Image (cartoon, rainbow over all chains, first blue to last red):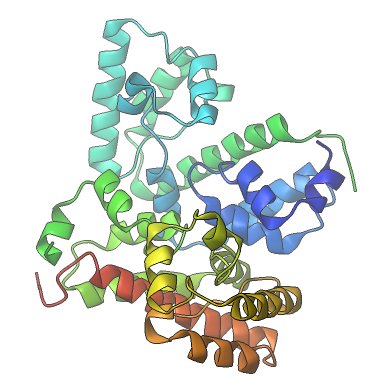
Length: 172
Length: 172
């Protein structure tokens, strides 16, 4: 699909195709529809990022909370979104040893307990070893740092999800 | 359920129960979770309204766009959310004559064409005659007026949806 095709979509088609670019946050997709026509894929991504930046901290924390734990109960139950399944699988998170899974689950619990939202990292840019190392470092951060870091990762995840849907080099 | 029970819910249970208080806008529910504990049902509703008020106009238009047309194609296909079905049915919108349905569909199309989002009205407070009259009046309004009016209606719809879920007189 080219960006010119994106601009031709009806609202329902647009939210159906892009509604999970930010995990479970269809409202963001519904909001950026106001900004059509998009000049490029980067423009669409920029509008998503700009909208996220307008949200108060509760909204940003809400976005993070709508993300699943890495190698958590949803992945074990097979109920991750298709996008998350692809991402977690590509980074090796869906084929962990029992020890690795136990370690990640302990990290998830500590992180959620400290920050009130799950650890979010762009799995497309990190293999499991980098993710485990990132967990250790980020657990020491402040709440503000982690809210900002998590949201930066959400935006990167969104970019890769857009790349899966639209030809990056197409322009209006 | 009492408000004290609401405050005991895990995040997933909370979004599963209240995720459609604002139609299809689970992100709002995910955001107000930050404001627990809620002192009363009014407090929970106030936090939802406050969060909506922080959104830029694109976000408010996005909320309106996630609402179905009254007596529109979703109701004819039987694919409305259960909340919308109850509301549209209670106001008599699911048992229209053919003429009434045609008239409403023409109004929907004119309204969408002018404002870029659907006509939203709290069906619990209006029977079909009042809705048809409201349509006629509101079609003449400005975009800013209708964005604000639509959002006021969304907040009322949310209040009635909360009343269906939680004992109104319970306090923390």
